[in-house]
Image 1 (cartoon, helix red, strand yellow):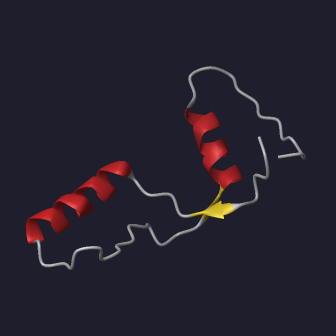
Image 2 (cartoon, rainbow, N blue to C red; image 1 turned 180 degrees about the vertical axis):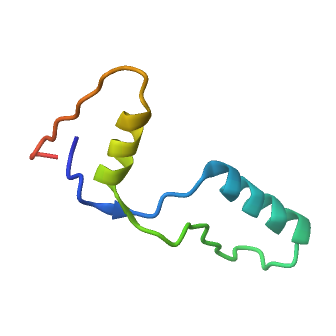
Length: 68
């Protein structure tokens, strides 16, 4: 793994799909208009990785690679 301190705003795929469906149904946007779907909370990659390891049904560890 690379730098686990980076922060990103991860979005739930179901919520993003619902937002896209809402826009398609609403239909009152300009062609080429940009939309941002986000949770509004930046999370560290370490936080996400720790959560996935905690949910795993098998023992897991991670290693960082300083060159990445």
